[in-house]
Length: 502
Image (tube, rainbow, N blue to C red; front, side, top):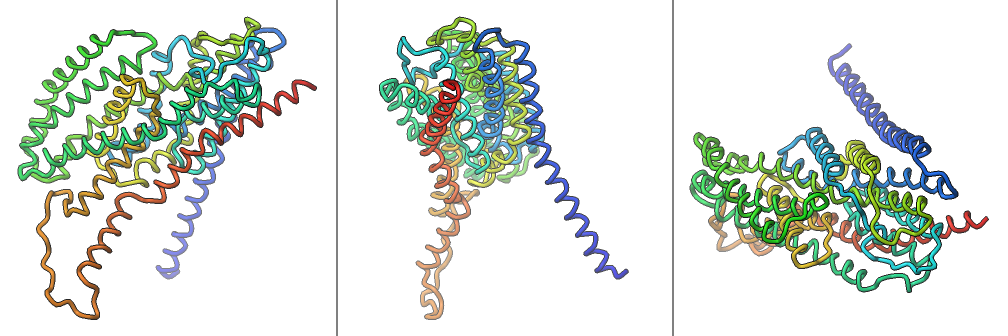
């Protein structure tokens, strides 16, 4: 057989094998998800309290598992996407680290109580029947899970919290009218749609600008890195110490404001001093090239992504299993759980396993979108995004502003991308200012003018640095999240109510 024909046959076999593997993965992921939900159904059948609401408890467990799967598929990508896009971590390692840290955060620091009315979005009447309350919770979180599922399919990273807000809002209105809604709370949440990404983007851009002008644009980058990289690592240590104290460990540790500030300062000093010898060793034989200096941010970026995942698991596990705890409490007491209820360990385990499984099975798609498709990432840019996310949450918590971690992270990605665009438009590339190129005095009439060439170059840079279709698509998904989840929840509640009245 001729060699060319053999090569063609081998290529066909290779494509067939790739297609077979893709088909196997596409079948395996939903299949494993279904098995996970079936396992929850069997476990809940044995744990559900006896009584007229036992079937609701079982259904609530399955919904909690479904919600956890979708949180893992959509929300966790915001923490690991920049690290994968910068090639600081391969996808497999990122999935493993995120799964372990998310599960550890959920189980170790996931909290012992949860607000069952989702931050007072709705205020049910005293006469609100417990069965209606249970159906409201089920419809709310099932709708949130369905919206997250659709958003993941569309490659749109959206806010889990806002999905739940929309679900509670829609089901509450369907159950008791517009008077049940706490509109001041909704106004604050709506304001966070703008506040979250803008704060995250501005802080990430400011951090990247500092790194560029103080390190990467310097003639002697290695010396500049010895001076400033330990300070940036110390800043990460201080910020994340305060972040974990206030957010990630808030359910098991309640420090005072002065203690949090002292903890942050001590961690900053310790992180700076501890990292100086490490940076000095790495920089000893380092070439004065941007790529080599940027490599100093790789290890700190891995730690930052892991800490973000731990804090995310601690905070957001309640988004998945909170309604299950509320439904169980309502079934046991016979009253609507209008306050805080306990989160048993087995409930936290369901949330932790669901988030980790959803991340492993469906997370890679969103991780690639966040890490590579919005703008090009490297270790310094990804490090600035991760650090900006923690700083923004701290500032928002101090000001009492309701913000979305998803919007903050994506805003940070956009922030570093748009900063790079502006620097490129000003002639400031990765290596600093570039001398202007000579322009012919008399351009040919058949050629474009220098001004046309400059405008064309700027357009090319903008298309390359930040892909506008992702900006518009993600912004649209954010805007419709609350109404879409609310519409779904209203329909689901009406259907459940009609079935229960039969």
